[in-house]
Image (tube, rainbow, N blue to C red):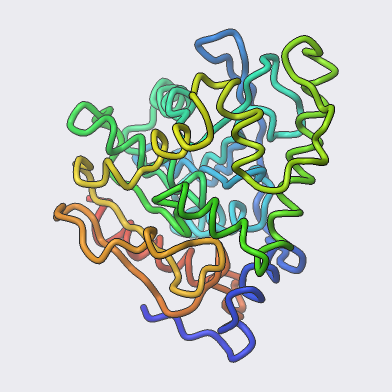
Length: 317
């Protein structure tokens, strides 16, 4: 289905900002669960269940500094629930309203945590799983599928990803441009809150001193992400964690949707083709970053309708 927004939402910035502040998603009732990780930490999971049927489950991964309660996550959960499929929206470490126990938090290719969630769902009896990711969560889901290749858990049947930073350096440098100052400032403010908490929990490892000198993701990742998670520097982190390098190794049906007017994404996030018959690339003219606004009575956005269509056509047997 072609995305044909109203005139107002043909603007990439408006499409990106509007849902964050004005979208309300009703009818999603989460049940929270706390599970242990392999390294004595924990993850917070929010289940949106409408059926006892465990044939399929949608595992939804949010974006940078997001959480399960974001409107785009709730909207996707509602969409899958509307066709009788349960959804599991998980929170990256430290993103569910409770600080995690380790100095380390989350990053763009921490697939151990995603696999922990997948295995937990399988233990709960789910037979088939579709991974749905937004922005960083989209990169994480694609990275997992590509890195695992034919060794992926057999229950994982497909990936659907929106507004994906396929090339993290490209996105980081695009967001550092003056026209995106509003977004960069917001991200750094949210990340500062995380660092302040960590600096109190682990004062010998994490320091907030001098944070005001951080102006972009290179500064932040050089100082925090890279050293905390075993990368040499920001460039090493970006190169290592970009999912673009693993796309050709994905063995399951996959949809990647990046709007052409996404203010976050640079040219390298729109590969002209991928030599992999399992991957469908969709670059709608409009949509912004995790936008795709539609005005419908059921409240669903174009991204959610597109995800359901792909799920029905390519994933569900």
